[in-house]
Amino acid sequence: MDYFEDKVALVTGASRGVGFATARELVLRGAKVVITARGEERLEDSRRKLVDMGGEVVSRTGDVGIWDDAASMVSAATEDFGRLDILVNNAGVSMRGDFQELSPEVCSQVLATNLTGSINVTRAAVEHIIESKGNIAFISSIAGLFGMPGASIYSAGKGGLTGLSESLRLELADAGVHVGVAYLGFTEHDPEKRILAADGELVPPDRPAHHPQALAAKLILNMIEKRKRRIVMTPAGKAGWIAYRISPWMVERLILWAKSSRIGIYRRFS
Image 1 (cartoon, one colour):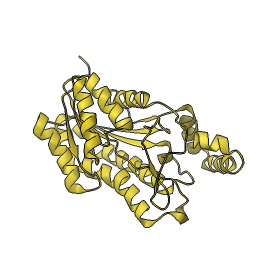
Image 2 (cartoon, one colour; image 1 turned 90 degrees about the vertical axis):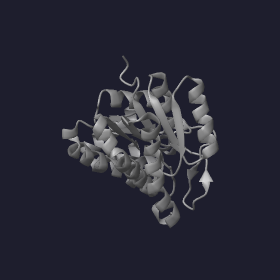
Image 3 (spheres, one colour; image 1 turned 30 degrees about the vertical axis):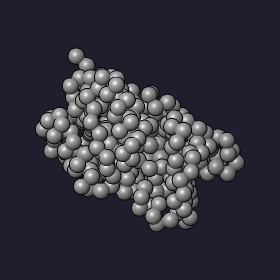
Image 4 (tube, helix red, strand yellow; image 1 turned 120 degrees about the vertical axis):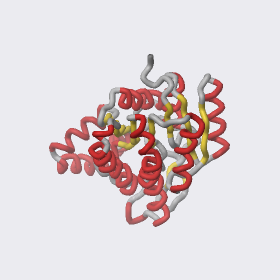
């Protein structure tokens, strides 16, 4: 029997991208899934695609940064399926821009989704996860392992997930709950994906993809099934993480060098 068969999973930010790919992989492996996102039309379209694959899937529109919406997402799982075994905190907003140029609204929006949103949904779900001795997964980024220029608030939010997960792992250890963090590289994006510029304008992503969405989804589920503490995707991400633990100064100098003198390299790996 597959580990995920008949498990109930909640995936936030699942109308597209890694969230949808993760929900799809869960459906293929027999899980019942609740998907959430802010855009109702796209979310319903994604739900229909998963149902057409044979999945038991419900959707709940809402903003993870708003407590009542987060609580409603969890209620969708418990009301429709009677339990909650797996929470995948995937909802996120990307941004680009130097700190001194960022509007206060961009700072607030990125943190509200990337950090507060994960806190809200996890807090609403934690009693149910304890009851099922289940899994809590946070989807972070290489930028959550060490700060990147031009992504300060994004790095702050994703880095905050590390501290949150480490605290929860200790608090919930005796309850048999698994807590893991996936540090993704720059993942293949949908054509309509947009990120926040410094002034709040929505602009196309400006980085090449490091890995496909389907691969990210498979590795996230592997982390959950094997109850791993973390996964770090891409060889460059793993090398950077190890190097940063050994010598933060060296990594910072390399990033600054790449940014100033080797634009192609910096854009490829940042």
